[in-house]
Amino acid sequence: MFNIVTIIQRAVVQGIPLLFGSTGEIMTEKSGNLNLGTAGTMYVGAICGVIGGFFYENSAGAAFNPILGTVIPLLSAILGSLIMGLIYSFLTITLRANQNVTGLALTTFGVGIGNFFGGSLIKIVGADVPTIVLSKTSACFKAGFGFAGDLGWFGEIFLSYSWLAYLAIVIAVLCGFILRRTRVGLHLRAVGESPATADAAGISVTKYKYIATCAGSVIAGLGGLYYIMDYASGVWSADAFGDRGWLAIALVIFTLWRPTTSIWASILFGGLYILHIFIPTGSNLAVKELYKMLPYVITIIVLVISSLRNKRENQPPASLGLPYFREDR
Image 1 (cartoon, helix red, strand yellow):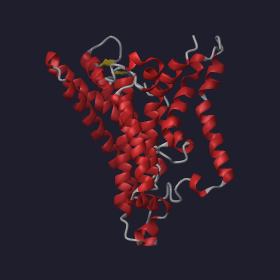
Image 2 (cartoon, one colour; image 1 turned 135 degrees about the horizontal axis):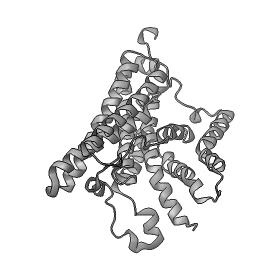
Image 3 (cartoon, rainbow, N blue to C red; image 1 turned 90 degrees about the vertical axis):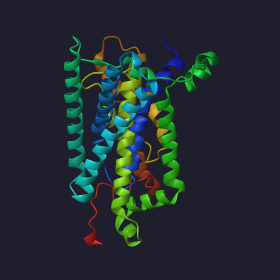
Image 4 (cartoon, rainbow, N blue to C red; image 1 turned 60 degrees about the horizontal axis):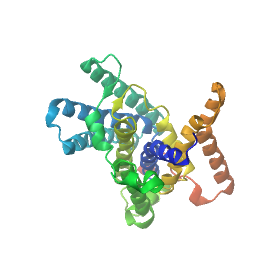
């Protein structure tokens, strides 16, 4: 039955991984780096969280501590995604490798790492079904407001999510504030627009690019952790993410590189992603596939409209995807 409250809830849950991924990619692109490895970074963040949670949950047994059950997977995911950011930064900033090729290579690498270590853990468990289930760890990440159900539709729509979902919103708002209201954000935007000018003004281009790229990777990695521990209820299976990493990159264009806009845009994309479930199409699978195209079609439309309007504030950073050679300054 068509239930608007249920649709909004599911759209938010679907949109939170996209919010993490798009916020992280926006911070990266504002420094002038185009990281197409977001999907791989989300995979690595997820599998590192799974590895940390798996070994702690199995070693602790009945003495499982909810605090450690939260902190260990969280730190593992942060460390794994940070390493991905450092690899990308070293290759593209220090060695000045092609950003598009490097990003695509990291996506392939991240997905391979996730499937390899996920498959290894599945062999350790020896389960008949090729999945890993971390029910205790997932319960720590799914914890929310217990009184949400007593507030009717308001509680279900606004207060029925886990703490990681609200963390995603806080991070997006904080990133938007940093970019628009602080000197650090001004320097970061200057590096993304004209690194030569920023360098001449005494701003360390390399430092800002490294920090923004690594911070963006960590944020994106949290999106992978959220997907596994919250949305999938602690169940890991190979290739479970689908195309969410690419949707997060598309969302960056849709939001015109504004982190706060990503909050409602990610919910919209989450709704479009599951729209085919609620629209009756019978046995016509082709129509369902057309509905799945909606997020990408809308992104293309927004890109065309923003290009026609030709407003500078709606355009990507001028040096996006271009390596910076100080010798050419």
